Length: 440
Image (cartoon, rainbow, N blue to C red; front, side, top):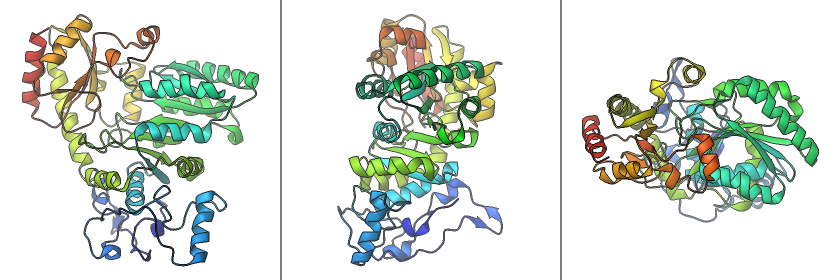
């Protein structure tokens, strides 16, 4: 994985660190092992085993010439970004170490971290979408993402066309043709294909490989729009979209990567070709995450495989119980997919079913609210991917701003409860769900 080790650590003298050990005797080290020290040389920080938190707004240059060279990278006069530390709106030791480790999981050439998942998404779109351009996106999306595309970017002349997450290759070909026609009519271009898979909150999967084939067939290489995908629900453990044809992967690092419901952050991974403009936009508008948040994420990445594995095992047990319960109408759980297109996508794209799923209560909003209010262990809160189990009502909470007709079309119903299973004892969670369903 080509990472510039000169730009990874935050030593005051910026001495060249020792090369990272990524294999032993020809045996490649796994990401879970690399999370313990990749991108950081303790000898550059007084021997501190863990990276210190670098709470500073600015960094001293070795020389005036070095300062000029760094700003040439920051401003884009020279490609590749800054060669050293400049100012905390642009880069910082904790953020650079974090970016190096994030890239390891998906073998990404480059990575960027942001102050939130939405700031990552907004910076991505501002970097790649111009006036009169067209965005193609799957549906449903996280409600704030839909709002950003449909209500905010549209104010500046950008348009969009959307398609259901379960779309076939033929459907994708048709939607891309429609997008090209719209872009030509507006005098712009198809700027991006934006996917969310699994979709929030329905867990519907998008066939990334099919979309890549459709995009390659519809566009010449020099005008091909990037395929960006929100991988928050399954990444980094259960899905690696860069291996299936995506160009850019986005994360709400608040969720599984952070994993303790105590921070807010976002990430973008991919090739330098696509991330370069995003880095320049981040430098301009200042959406980088702060040093303390980056430090906390470095702590969290050390246990992300353990936490996600335990949560996934718990979810399988809880869903097996819920599947048989008489007050449960259905489950949007990837582990229960039957034969068909969604099962095929799951087998090609995913290594696990995840721990976030949709629970459909028999009834409507009233019954769902009674269930949520009766929970004792699971917390009634939005978000997902934390150590604790969370449950919420998307139609009345996270997706309240989505028009009712669109919610109906996307399957975001009044009896849908989104559940994110944590790392508690699975039998305790089953007992909690059982008593809460008794209140319905």
